[in-house]
Image 1 (tube, one colour):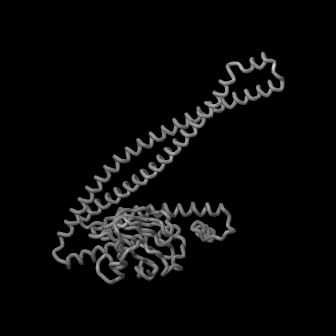
Image 2 (cartoon, one colour):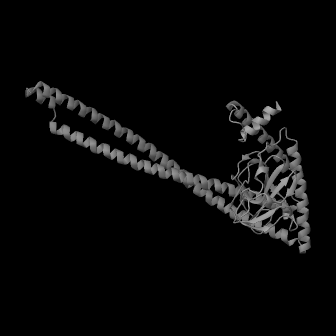
Image 3 (cartoon, helix red, strand yellow):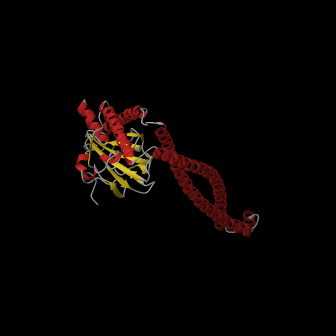
Length: 378
């Protein structure tokens, strides 16, 4: 039974033999979804624990969490606006094609009516009265029938085109109404973003003012690191309590060849400084730059943590986890499976940082290891 489950889990992650049947793959995906839901529930329990020491840090968490949500909402609105703009362009092009086709149908109908006009009001009666050749009469009658059918078809086509144009105009009107509403909401969210940014600046200044010396600041950073270690151990314990562990993604085979989570200069290396950045590396990058998963895995944590700000953790199986901190916003949620190169967040300066940067860690069995031994050399 456990062998079947293990094979199913490997199949859902793309490591199954080609000979296994499709129903097994579907069962595996359902099992993985169940694991994701269990991880999400565990993450919610962890997020409910206290992570801020005093009122200033609680306020910082509150403001930076709202900032992340505002950034996410703005991204959603911008994406929807781009989609609507593309759809509007396509609809206008479609309308132009319909109008051109309708003009062509009107021109053809005009030619047919002109031909009928030249034949006079009663061409059949004229043919009978002139006692024309019966064969010629039959040919003329067939011609008149085809002309009448073609005229009726033109009228039907024009009616269809008129309906299609009306539908297109309605769709264009609906999209324009939504675009106008999006413009108003974007303006509102931008104002909220500016307000939250100013609030954060004030909270960070309050936090900075409480330090009497650099030694006090360093002591606080080390305390934040100790609190974070406790939280990370709690995450590790939650993962150990799962009914089924995260299946292997063979991340150990990629050591030294993992892609960088973001492109930039390393400003702090592994275990070369004190404070919260002691166990990983800091990569400076522009605010809002996309942060990507270095390998396939499952998101097990995505929340604010003291010292790290918005922190996202991916479990890759085989007791390997990667951590991404100081994010501006999250692009993935706990329980979600992500693939190598998938966007999981954006670079920011959450956690009270002065400059935007990404803090990146790799952990094996809960212990930090040098990330530079895992990511590819440049």
